[in-house]
Amino acid sequence: MSRTLARTAVFALWGIAVIAAESHASAQTARRPTACSGCISNWYYFDEDGGGGVQDWNCGRSSYNGHRGTDFSLSGGNGAIDVGHDLVAVADGVVINAEDGHYDRCRTCDASVDGRCGTAYGGGFGNFVGIDHGGYRAFYGHMRMGSVRVRTGDRVTCGQVIGQIGSSGCTTGAHVHFETRPPTGGYLTAYDPFVGMCSPLSRSVWTGQGPYRGLPDATCDGTPPPPTCPSGTYAIWTCDGARTQRRRCIDGVDMIEPCTYGCISMPIGVDDLCAEPPDSDGDGARANIDCDDANSSIFPGAAEVCGDGVDQDCAEGDAMCPPPPEDLGVPVELDAASPPPDAMPDATSAPDMAGDAAAVRPSALRPGLEGGCGCRVVPRNAGFRMGLFSVCAALWMGVRLRRARRRG
Image 1: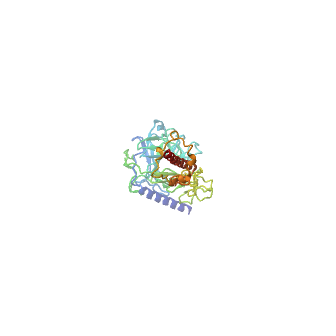
Image 2: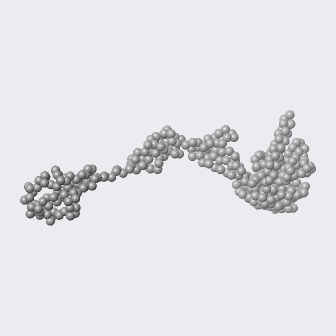
Image 3: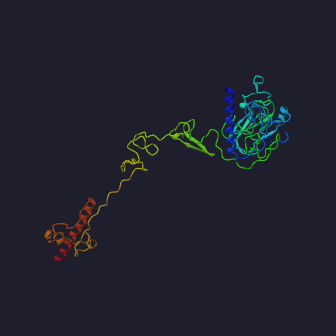
């Protein structure tokens, strides 16, 4: 019963992979992963059987049970590794995984036979490179130790050398294991890049897949890969580990938004949220708009007090107080018969009036000056009063001088 369920699960995943592969049929096609044209002597294709049997894309048996990729075996075996046969990127893309430093002359997957080999090294791939080519991801496994030339995050172009053929990890001889997967998904979602009578694909991944048990063409597609999102990103906003920002990626557009006040994780499938700014002083204005969130009397819209050096309403500085209104007075009106002030004699030219001082009485003054100064001015400050007094004194002196001249 358990074997039946396992087989059902495998077929279900296989179906999902086929659908994913078909949905990316418009992606750039691939050239062969080997730089050489005559260095490969054997082929082990993807096992299309999905059960206990073996069947390749051409309905042959050039595979082995459960094989999830295509093996291009090096002519000469492990003895030819030191020659240095280059592996190249099958299309433009971005490196998502790269691992090196493992023993590269393995002849077994059994770690008890050789502790330098097996699935403990690079997940069985040993020294390997994984590249996101846009509509699919490709893994190049079992490379020669020290030959890996790219690192995670590197951008590569079609035909660029990424390493050399070896026999590292879980392997019995020198070859390159080439495996295609959907943009998302693991080992069980890998699918056959070849199209044939026993392959579910309607379109080959290869630019030219070549003959059965032969190498695909070395021709690059030339079509730029569709934009892809970095590994570990999602189409919904997701908090980072430090909870200081959130990130999402949609159709290759990678967006990062800082969360100044922290990031809040939400249920799965829902955008994580940036925390709202606090209102520390409880005045109704959050810290992002309150110019002083530690003082509840200061916030946007508060009553502003001018001239106190405090910006109560957060309106870019303390308000200036308006200037006091200017002093306005009524001008002095002189009698038509009186000479203008600048025509009055000054003190040095006035005659001696000492003898006539007693003869001058208030009742004898001109009508406008009866009883003292009759200037119709309302004084408003001391300076104004002094000016008014001076004008009245000058007028009074002029009247006395004219009376003195008549007597003389």
